[in-house]
Length: 298
Length: 335
Image (cartoon, rainbow over all chains, first blue to last red; front, side):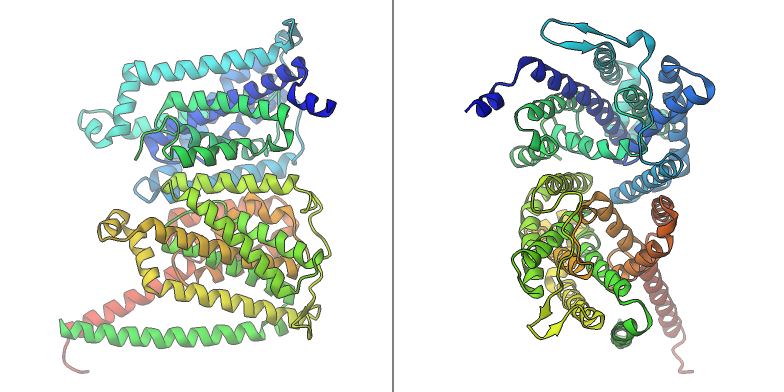
């Protein structure tokens, strides 16, 4: 009886601790699915390399610290630029050749690129995690009365929300975003108006990749820097994207955070299912609303 | 007009004879193979060849990209291994049990996944397969990280001891041929024609009155069931069912095999499976380089070699025939 009570009413600090972990995971789901949605909107490609690029961001931070002495704050700026440029090179070298082909080939090509990147990093650094310490200024934490909030985790939640919000505002409320949305709807017409759509596609891909790298840097102190960190998270992010529907930028952000929380809650009430709960929700959403919660029917 | 059709029929007849000759040669080679190669190696390749053929039914003929076929392959492996080892079922009953479970899973997954098209379909299958992977990690009967080891191969009809490598080999070959025959029949039936129509232009197939989702679902179930048959057989060959077989990487492997051999070709997946298994065999000592090389092959295939080995051969043969028949029409005088 007492065991059952324990399951039904977990101690509050434990509940909040899991919710915090869930919110942190959700922050990464949101940033990654946001990047996937932006790339998909314009390129019509599901970027399977996204997980590898997130891993590259974390490694960029780790290597910059070990070899160049660039600290966390420097890496937050450096990694998205470096990895974003690598992404742009990949788009120019590989992706642009397959826009005319079936969607399938985009998935296969980016999957192959992810295998190459992850294989190379695993060959060089093995499968065990490399430590990356929390920046000095964000070490320690706050006692909120009902729970203990490590400063770094609080920073990740706030920063990721700001990043998502700014991206959403840029896409929905600026002229640049309007071009982007127009090119998503009808690239040929936008080109006829004199907008350089191919360049926009390249830059959009670079931006999406940079976003993944930024998430990677932020993840480095929380999860260890590991060549496989990306392939572990990307499949869950795909499920998040299916649940949210890729038609809407806001949808991918909201579903990222909410599903992270749901995962955290499941860890409290029924830990065995915490790894599968997002996939179960995906199956239910497919039954009830096949286009996704925020998606438009196609 | 009539002239053309005469040439076409003659060409098709020649193609049919050639296909029959190739098939006979391949079966002979398969029968002789264990005398020249390590039987377990050829059996592994045959299991993956059947897996890839089943996968190709979906991707190559129906145009549906499943990124989660390892779920069927691996789950059936677990079921076969468990029923044979714990319940003491015969090898055939064990494989049938695995196939049955994979078929039911295919029905459920297919029913969910065909609600979405294209890229979403791939992501849904991937996510559902990942769910199965986590289930296999947690579930008691799968043995977690250890898997189910030392699965007995048993005796066939109570007579033939399958621990004999040659007996096991011909048993596996028979299973492969049965599976291959089912797929071949499905492809060359009116059902297969409708699948191809769906692949080429689904809205048009709908407008012609076909309930395309029924066809896609049946193809998905058939593909999942046969993938399960391959997985169950593999667990008897290696006497082991493990997490590797339900892992996402296995879904990638089978995709690579089909792509190398040629999407939508009858023999392509078989060739691709043999290439891929051989490659893994020789590269196993190089660790993660296998992954890198697989990635490079994916990129090269997508950018320059989309027809695959068999697709490329078929393309050149067909082109040569077209050129020769064109020159025959241009120069009607018999030479």
